[in-house]
Length: 514
Image 1 (cartoon, helix red, strand yellow):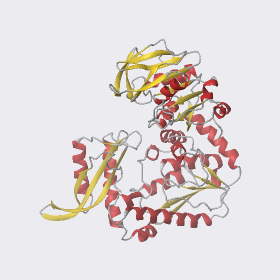
Image 2 (cartoon, rainbow, N blue to C red):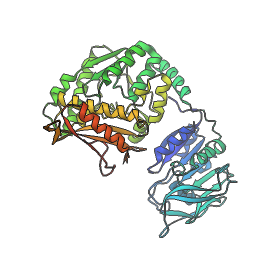
Image 3 (tube, rainbow, N blue to C red):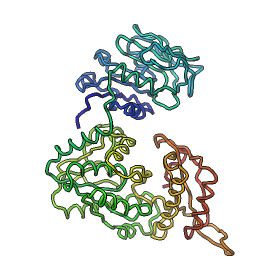
Image 4 (tube, helix red, strand yellow):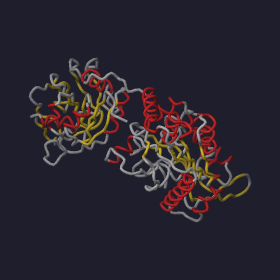
């Protein structure tokens, strides 16, 4: 799809918050794209962007080897907002001075004093808390700039040239710790750039359906549907556009959570009347996994077997013109290319073959972040239990079973995990905790149940809070909820006599156990 009428470009200088900046802009109902820092001024002009945001980054603006932007972009007449390193780069490029800080470096929540006559801080409080994270600072602002915010240890917490609409902030307005950060971003987007907040999910859904109708025409589309939110929303957008010209293949490998296969089939076949082929391949996958304990071997076996099943089923359908994929914007950004040169690895398999002979790839979600995909799903009428389904690894429960996989172990884990999800929903934790699941450990231990000795499995419960899944904290679940979970799992799930709760953050641990 072509670039939207009003768009902001975020230039990535290697900052850890780059995607967060873009998400915050989208939350202000303004479309934006992330591009490499060295994009040319000519391309920015050609694309018609209404504003430019420089991200932070780990380098020093005065270092000759640090990332630099095309200096001609400051001649385009387009408003620019520099954040942290981006502000320092703006200062250094336009004739100011940036120095390293030996003492009194700022990190974390910081009291900042604002000049509210500044366009960027219009209607803001004169004093507020912002999030600082820097070891350099702007010592002298360039000609034409004035200082618009200061802190105890930062003489230039913000600066602006209101004639050219150039703004620099040393703090991070995109993080929640900056109390009025969203207001500052809105002032830049609406007042400096003149954006009208037209990026809304209902218009995205309608525009995408119209685009898909025109692109696909009367041709046929195939989609590997996993039941996850990305593939579900992508498939439904295509279905709304071309109906029965879309065929979805749902490979049920038996490694899904309890009742998920039936839920997926019910929703898409009965509620939306989609052309869905459900392949019951549980025995085939379990046979291949028999006796395999190494997690990497499990992943490889599941990925390769999925490809074989998908190929076999797709060949029965005759000529298919397009393959629909649930690629989302972080996939595009993290590829570093911005364009899909070959078929990407499907998110719930090891990768689809690149020689299947499709005319092209349909990726209706490649402009969206995950939270926007969920909004699109709700707009399309997908039930909330599917839209807000917990993140799930491609190999499924096979890598939440420590050691080899068997049908008996799957039944134990499915029942325990279902109880966890029921109790989190009943206690209002299902939306506030970002990911939670049960693990069937390879540990057996002695227990006492009734008057007898037991020697049974240990279930580990894992729950984390995170904003980006790159780092995560273990969730502080109330003790009464943990107690009820333990009692229910031990009483209701056969062959379990012990429940433990994982209180390890990421790092040092990963979120998944395998």
